[in-house]
Image (tube, rainbow over all chains, first blue to last red):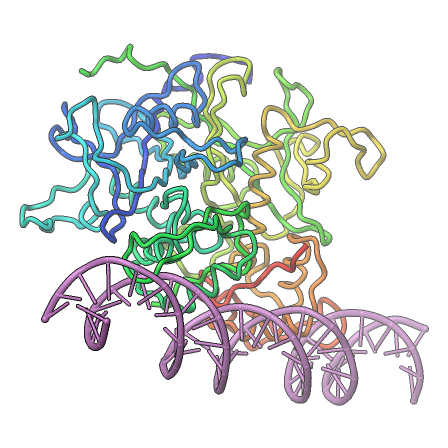
Length: 252
Length: 252
DNA sequence: GATCATAGTCGTCTGCCTGACGATAAACAC
DNA sequence: GTGTTTATCGTCAGGCAGACGACTATGATC
């Protein structure tokens, strides 16, 4: 078939972001309140249109910076920076997912350490970190007893997919360190795993495993007592991205 | 921001397919020859535009059927059919990936058992199964000594990503059975793993492992000697999709 | 300052899984 | 029958994981 611009329908292409962090022992996601229809007043994932001259990853990094101030971690710079991990998640293109027009959304997953309260265009009441359990429960009641409206569009599905990706990916990669500050202790890393998986892990076996996995952690020499108790060694993320052997999620 | 159709640039959205199969002990992908510019005469992955009323998965299933005659496996029908496994792979949206216009391609991965020769619009010379090693080598020479042109667009990258997805996914899921006919032997399944990973596996340990993994294989009661040698039990894929314990790819 | 609570770190033991590999079984080709 | 091919069962040693005991080093409390 020859090139015919009328042969294909036009689409709008957006990026949506699943930004995850661990706060107060709970896996939380960034949610923004919609200011206009459709789904006005409902919570949604942050996102926006891809610009004409922009790559998908660039668009996601730009949206992430606009919403959180985080720089995306540049894979070309393996040195430890405090940029967030950013990767493509999946693409959602149901013809009816946006009632206004045909929109294809390329969802991205970002993992960030605990951050100060978010800002969305300077208005704090329109953006918040919410526990993913709360955002995903359908028609339930939040921690404060108020009824919880489900996320706008198909964002509940996108969030669920992003959470599952994070849960499985920290098993066989060193991604869990993306939830930690530059320097962290073994116990802090363990609490990340516990929050993301929603399980309790044995501190002794966890310590043996992560310190015994080559390339996962490198000691900085310092110690801290910020968690209380006996001083703990501080580590930075090692160069390894794939863990061998992997961290296995406990069954059931 | 209010709704303003001029606020976003229009995109064309396509689906591209990485269709993999195992033929003659080699992992092969479906390639089609381009009939028009750009990249006229070069090999490319099959694909096409997403229609206005079509979901992304529907578009991928339609293209798969057009190119191979395969039905996509419907996840809602867990019963064994001989449809191919189809899943979304990743989305590619570099602004310059198509010189004609801004095209975002949602790549999908399909796994199929060995098939009769492909047809592309009835013309066999314009579609073929090619070993992925051959399609991915840059500027080398094919089995017949002819120089090999790289795939059109960014399809080499897409193919490489699809192959890596398949290689890693058969580790922890029962997806390798998607490369087999409905009934197959342990040896045939082992040759699938060997072809996809490009390694030799110990037949005895492999047999112990797959028959010991609950839900992976269910015996049909029949036997076959189509591989020569002692008759082998026939199996069908069991209901398990996640393997526990996983099949581990040998190191290096 | 003694005691307690908290968290971190090191060891031990047992069972399971894995890789290496010997041995046997059942077909076909000659 | 002999040889070849493939399938299948067994054995053994090493490694890793879960369960859990023991000890250490800090801050909090009395």
